[in-house]
Length: 141
Image: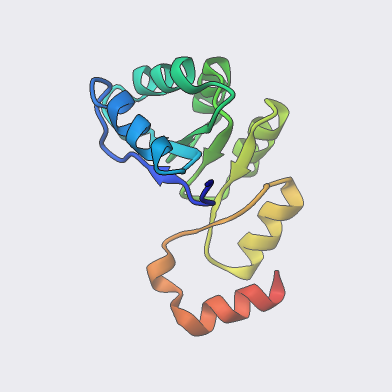
């Protein structure tokens, strides 16, 4: 059974990443994200890519600049998640044939990101939205 959620391995160390990832994958989760502010993030992502390439989607979170996108593309990640919407990051991500999920909070940011080519949106920080705002955004999108 596949579950349509992304497991975020915040703070994971490279010596822990494979054991944790196997547990997650065995539970049916097929998308794993390692945030850029995790220790040894590139080592962890390389280990995941070498172990699971083609079997699950591997992504990086908290990606904020083009240089990170280029390094992650070379490693072979499948998707990029950002805490903000930066058109240059989205464009570089799409040019590298990866999925792009920028962080947005306003309707203007949502439409700008989607018009720039984003594959989906990360509502961030979602805790600021509240139920009424989420319902309004859903109606627009």
